[in-house]
Amino acid sequence: MITKAELYDAVDEREAELVAFMRDFLAIETENPPGRNYAEGAAFLAGAMERRGYDVEEVRVPSDVVARHYPDRTDHERVNVIGRQTGGAEETGHDTGDDANDGPHVHFTGHFDVVPAGEDWSTDPYDPVVDEGRIYGRGASDMKSGIAASLFAVDALRAVGPPLPGTITQSMTVDEETGGFTGLGFLVAEGYVSPDNTDFCVYTECFDSSRVCLGHRGVLKFHVTATGTKAHGCMAHDGHNAITVMNDFLTRIEAYREELHGRTTDLPVTPVESRHADVSATMLDAGYSENVVPDRCRATFYRVLVPGETVEAAREEIRALMAETESALESDLSYDEIMYAEPTAVSEECTVARTYVDHVRDFHADPAFVVSPGSDDQRFVVNDAGIEECIVYGPGLLDQAHVVDEYVPIEEVLTAAKVMAVSTADLMGVLAR
Image (tube, rainbow, N blue to C red):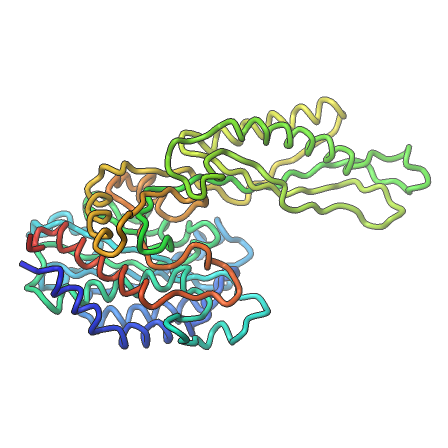
């Protein structure tokens, strides 16, 4: 049996190694969009797992699958990585359902794509800096620190105990920042993550080490384009102004938004202001010149769904509003979808959630269950693979995601690694009481 003290010491002993790993990892510019340097990032992670004794596979996404989801990015290769350790021996393939080892199958997963760094950083976002207990660099919180924490948690487990009675899987995926369809979504579709090979799943996204996340709101991103008839501004009567048509639709969207604010959830979405459905117009594009009546106007929308809503129902509501504008102004509107994510939530009574929150208490007196205001890849595991024992837990700070001078506190990464290590030992039945 393994004690907490042994595991905590084993993680602390690896602090310098963890920081060095993070600096090397953050230096790889895996920006998405467009999906830069994924092969380099995958090779780095594959090498890290191979040195640790995992059986590793780099999973390349076929070009036709990439084209289906990201038609303008097919020139960038999509590569995911998955590694498994079974007991003391490595296992090949991605179906471990008939494994002779009867222990549980624990799967850690996280994404290694990052949003574009942008400008105005104090230092180079891809030349990581360690300063006053923080690691600075794009992806430090969102969410390369989560991948580091899970890797080093398992290192600690292997260092202090006998071979574990079960299977540990680590997957590192791409494209979460643009929907995840060619990342974890692809691994689920191909059977790399299924009830046959996964009993407990931990998605290591950034929520800080004090919170266990049960799910997320959903999202529907789409364009609506209004069409009219072009005319010279001095003879506007000869035209049909697409901006006027869009203005009618936007007025209906605003009334719809008020209705959505009445759709709330009792789940612990954080912040509390996000515990309702919503819709926002986020971009507007129209016009050619100050003296031309435009024949087209395109608006982009971000529709947020609370658990209990469905994407298909949201689509139908949007189309109904479009039909009202078309009827009122005798105009045409078209709908073009960007991406969607169904809402996801698991019970706080599920085994993996209760196990994690119990061990978070060693470091935080009042750990919290939360639900994310935005979507993430957890939905593929819960909604598509049908695995209810799946939570989000990671060391990154949510308020550091996507910001200039992004950082993660080193202590946060160590704490999360400790919680991951002791929770895994508990789930596998080898934790001393």
